[in-house]
Image (cartoon, rainbow, N blue to C red; front, side):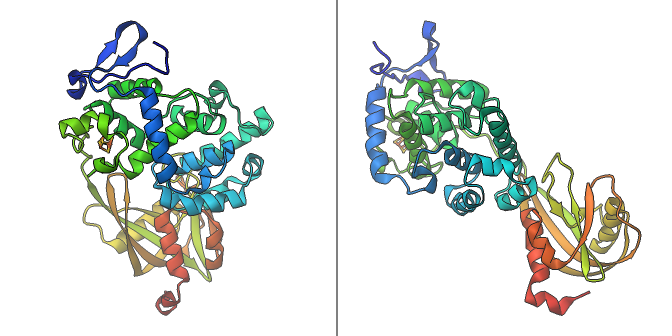
Length: 395
Ligand code: SF4
């Protein structure tokens, strides 16, 4: 039996999450439903041709464009990514342009996408590609995988789509499709399930057009085999899907309950010194690394916003200030934290900037704020300071 014709057999034990392994080959064994890799490729290909979304990174096979899109798409919906992708490619049309850019410029264009480490790794990897590979993205998984931020999924997505390398991919959408198709019930975030899914993803690869096959699998998960209410009646794989046969498409794969939500109260301070305000830069490691912001932090137990603003300003910047009125309240989320950020104004009274936490502090005009990369809630605050309604509430 050759690779192309190997039958993928799904067993009842798979549906119960106790998959059998095929002894010597180490490949997962499937019994019962029997989709062949050829059948899967054919079904997915014809569905993809007619139903794929027109996404800007699918219009050619440029590895740089595919790479940027894959990094942006991690943790982020395609519709959100499109304008960022187009703006980024306009600013940095080639890997050499990206490598030559200042990190602050890269972060500014990433602003709003979140997970800024992705942007810093992309930038560092571009520099390495120019320095070590003459500006050419390597088509070798061993070389590509050594670059910052390029894990197995991203490497294989680039190599299969740009160079038609026969490599599997596994991300949230494709792992959900595979779990349901083969009736693998356990949570894909668990290591045993992930190992199994990588093996399954590799087992079903066609010999040719692997990039299209991988994209079709992900697209099916994004559009049809969705986390809730999958549209099985429109699915090209429905005839051989174990989860559907068992009526368990809503419950496969199992999901670990989300972590407990934590509510946090924070205060942020906009300190004025004449016509200027203080903006400070975060350290190069940790959350929002290297981004700029107005000083902020959590309230202590029973502390008022005004007292917190004065305390935080002094602790974080060494400045004393007269705290004035509240400007606005911004609600935002970071992972399991639901943060209420109360923003206040203050007038500088004494002291010069010095900090054990922030890397740098700069006194800037409000117009200058636009060029500094900041987090989404801080951009909300900066825009508010420039808004016409704000002019009536000057300190
Ligand atoms: S038949 Fe339903 S559960 Fe199975 S792969 Fe298709 S959409 Fe997903």
